[in-house]
Image 1 (spheres, rainbow, N blue to C red):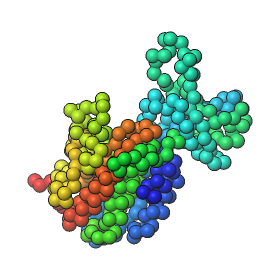
Image 2: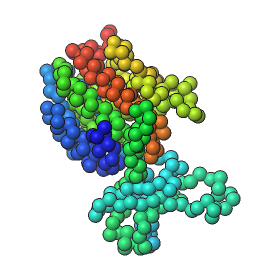
Image 3: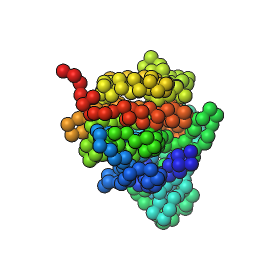
Image 4: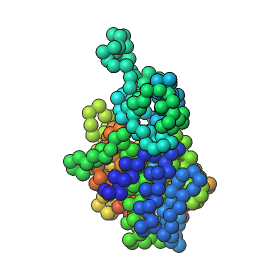
Length: 348
């Protein structure tokens, strides 16, 4: 939990993941055979073996904000990095990564008291918001931030009942955490495979990190770890998104980028190890790093393991740590089950 708090507490929006990635690499140095990074911002932790090459990917970037304009009064206009629901941004505190250090601000909009009757029913938009950092002029603001400065919502981790936590950036810092915890387990009982846990960059905007990591490591088998929508709260649809709940174990995805043979092996291993799991379908695309990994080079036998998440892409996402622990156990057991990459080539 100490490591996870450091990881989640470090801002790392897509394209500016370096600080969070360093926290991840520093932890990996305690048990991995080799730890490295690349020009795109991916971080690698390797356990070297003589068997097949297996890639475990969890993206370390998070959605964020970028300053687009500074007016004469020192108010900052901004755009979003990744997919935000503008409604959750109103009145949030933000942490901007200024050139002289972190800068705290608040997202402002016209108060409800001053809205005209026809405006009150309208959704808030980014174009009608601003960031207030408490300065009095553009020149004073420029001492702290510039156009292009990035930031995140200032929402720290809190521990809740039943092993649940709430924080910003769980999508998908928790995936990067999970693949490293799986590698930690594998370091204690080494598999035949050569395994790379990778904290990938830029998943929220380009999938570039996963594509370059898969090209560089050239895996034969891969698991992408991300979050998925929990459906155990009001206004959710089990018919459309499956029966997924916090505490129900990791979620295994069937369809699109998922190799049917990897999926079947994950189910088999989960049942053999007594690990509870849920199922979801991905008939067209997964929306995860798997969409880039599975088509790298000559193709990679890929699966997706997801952590149930409430309130995704908000300042207060929620997961159950029991699901995280179970996902790490499942992935480690899956890797140990592999003796040959040929096991995942479909039979004629």
